[in-house]
View 1 (cartoon, rainbow, N blue to C red):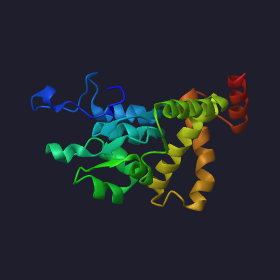
View 2 (view 1 turned 90 degrees about the vertical axis):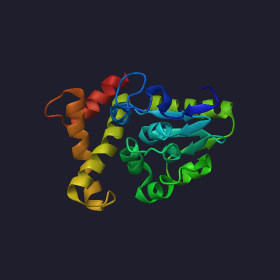
View 3 (view 1 turned 30 degrees about the vertical axis):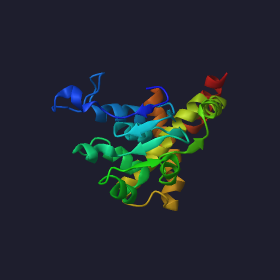
Length: 212
């Protein structure tokens, strides 16, 4: 789509009204979004042009969203007589219930400034050159971090949210925040890296080894 669109969602006409939620790669869309959200390495979305429907879901599951100022966003499913059902869990987790209730029913398109205000976009730049530069900077930041540490930092966020949900408390509960990251770091490191009884010392040693 070049500079015209980041992603405008599924081509409903290609399925003769029997769209089953699968894209051209044959993967159910909810599985695609889950895979992107849960991939160990941080994901950067470079948004230029239109991000509509399923494109909003891709923004929601990306870890960092950089948008060109002319980008346009929208949950436009209702304008087609359908619902943003597949992307809704990912989007609501990103922008919250209040914003979803305001934006889902009407399907109105909005600009990058509003997308940033609701938490969908993290950085807005002017022009394609600035967009490329911002993405390059974000990549450089990640490369400057320890590769294992960067992956586990992403995993900690997910684990803290899971623990908060299971505990039935807010994510900013100080006691939970104080305990969860360390526990999550060790658990996720053991699962992700295949190391049993993973300790903090081993985590440090492994990070240093991988950074060499």
